[in-house]
Length: 131
Image (cartoon, rainbow, N blue to C red):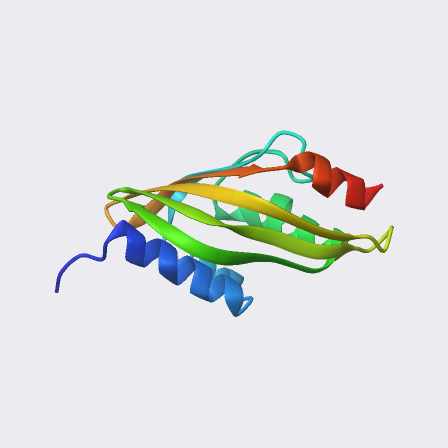
């Protein structure tokens, strides 16, 4: 059996995301995965390990946003690095304001495991929906 490529690993992550399957989204994460959310984003910071990612990113977003989602438009294959381009959407629960913003994600995969994630997005647009 041949090893899965980084592109396949990340494509599977987004397929699981579309199904709202958090366990499958992180099934191929390294135990010490580093997950960086952009400064100014509601879940900003670098989180290490699946437990921190779930607690500080996914649970927080679901708590604050109705229908929060990332819609993938395309993946760019860079070998062990993959770039995802798409956008976030959702309605902030406290303000009722809708958010729609472009985003890019940079992924590093080694040995079939997701090692790093970094988010790039227009945090001002997200902040405006939350105020």
